[in-house]
Length: 88
Ligand SMILES: [Zn+2]
Image (spheres, rainbow, N blue to C red):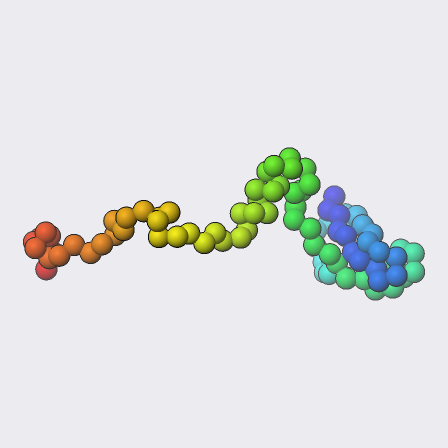
């Protein structure tokens, strides 16, 4: 059964359970004050992983800047046509 979490500006977050995946679930009425609330999104089941793995996933989202020394010598250098005579 899919569950969706919504955020009410007056009461905070609340979760509703739906019997089907179909339909527009971007908004719902708060069960307490009936105010229309927008859906909030969480990464799926990220809390069920260990702390180490969660940290690695979160850190993996950021690109790492590498220096030329870390990359090593450039092996993709273009070789001259003399070394590859079969190529026209
Ligand atoms: Zn409310």
